[in-house]
Image (cartoon, rainbow, N blue to C red; front, side, top):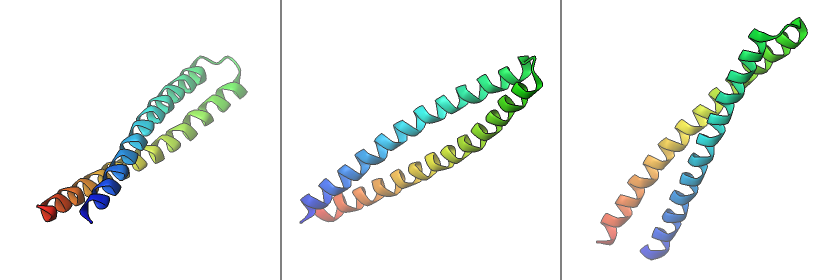
Length: 93
């Protein structure tokens, strides 16, 4: 009975790891997008383009914060799942 439980826990931990790696990549892309829009806003010669670039930078900062909160949530989930895995290992011994 404990073997299927370990398999389920392992699959869950692997899925959390994959999602965490994706969130790292997304966060890096968002930082690059934010910086490029901020630089475009500063160097823009047209006021409308500068306003659009600034707005895009602000939106990407808000979205980046949301992604960062999601990453923190995944990290906490990973810690909880590792604790469950340790508990399951202790019960099987």
